[in-house]
Image (cartoon, rainbow, N blue to C red; front, side):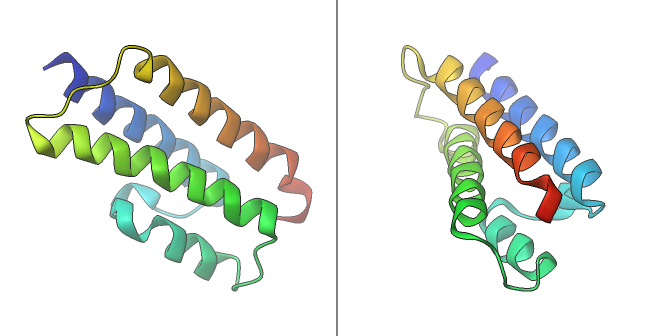
Length: 101
């Protein structure tokens, strides 16, 4: 299924980014644990901006997982482009706040 392939791909791209950006194997972290792992890596002192950004990232992963595993759900009409836009925004925000990461 093309939608499942897309969802797998967007997760792989984001995990590779996180692996490189934070020098941590996010590729081995299950989606539901992303926020907790990120919070641990930052010693629990996430700014509200970083926390919201991580929550946005986790939402992308939750939606992608739902599409991948539900076998019934499909992406909405513009949802593929919306997920890409959200992913770009998350990465941009991580890079904007990287000075204090």
